[in-house]
Image (cartoon, rainbow, N blue to C red; front, side):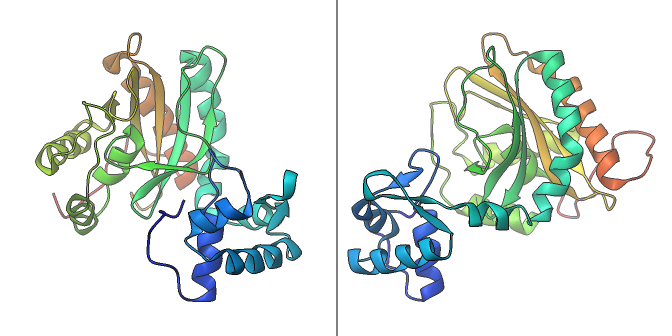
Length: 265
């Protein structure tokens, strides 16, 4: 979502991007006034571009004169192979992991400076969480985010550490030094976790998914209530499932869990 008060986008492409970014899971439908405010555009500009996007099928006219994302965007998004190819291989392992634990199972990829959730498996017993498909969450405060960050390049890690690390709960790691130590532990142990760092009462345990070149292309996580989640018990199950996905993604047999060779270590 665009931040209110941010500098107004200049080019037409950026204006269209600002309109599409105004929608999120908490606001799937927006009135014209809300759309203009959240995109940082004048009402007249928002009205003109939104109606052009409706004509193209990228937006739809919602109830009471509002707007919502159109099916044309979903069709276009389905062509994004980076997340989809991993997702296709991951779903059977995610279902098995859910059946074994009855906890939320999430799959995320790195998108910019955030973790983008591309698949989830959940049930009635699972704790309610903020992660949803096509939802972006911070790298430093989530299990999948820390794993993706841990196996990224040294230069990218430094970029992230130079950015603000907002605190979402009293347990969020907001110190770059503390976060660096946690990332080193992840590379050493092959898994990471977030203990009530994004949401109080919720713990996530995550492991990396590698491709044939030993590059981490996704992270798999279990998310459950902190009262019943045991990292030591859940970590082997998550790592095993992530290893299975890695074998499918890389399309080759390997003797054991592969590790990323990070020249920045």
